[in-house]
Image (cartoon, rainbow, N blue to C red; front, top):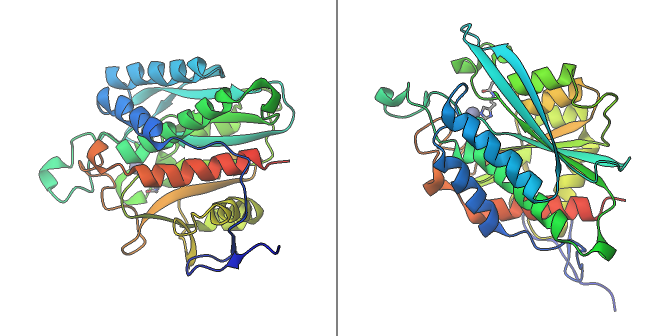
Length: 314
Ligand code: AHN
Ligand code: ZN
């Protein structure tokens, strides 16, 4: 019998209703819980006790899921000269495998809600449930799924989860592009292992909000169009074309993926946009970026797509 083919209104590639994915099911309840647990420490702003405790939590969770964890500590300075101590956390599945991919996202949260509608909040730190927490929550659940597989069916690919620090302390208005992404800037010049290579990278940013859609970010299209195709194609294949949309082009966004590209590894950014208007999510850099505004379906769409990419990588 011919497979039934159906082109939904959001799909560029027709959905094959007979397609059976080899990937396990991503549990959005687990991912949500990992976001909530990060938020419970308080805002993860640089040089704070909450930040440091949450870093320990993240590293320990990855170890609990059988990953080999490398900590990369480094000193840096915020754009206003404040000294900071950064911790990039690199957790590896199958650390000995030659064929590897990289999945990344930042774990720090912004020290100011400088996009809050109420100006009185502009100097208050944010929980960063979506902006920071969601990426780590999804990566932890992907790691847990990798560990859960029975020995006979284990994925042979290597996967490196890189949790960037100090992404979100940049200068308001985006004027000073170098003031953002300090952890990944450091890593791009000092990789955690000498001669580190990955086939490609997927950076996650704001992957857990309400009313979220992922458009093809333009630097990703410029540097790594085949990786964009791979990820968007995987999403469409398993029915998440509504989230991974071809309807509009994304914009050019300064984010951690640029630093990975700078290091010579092709990397894309999966960054949430608001379904209304296509800009950053409505809660972006506001006090509303908290656990109440995390959407499990969005976490599921991104997490299941990543599992599909991993389980179908040759
Ligand atoms: C700038 O605003 C220059 N880049 C956005 C990167 C970012 C901040 N992603 C989340 N928070
Ligand atoms: Zn941010």
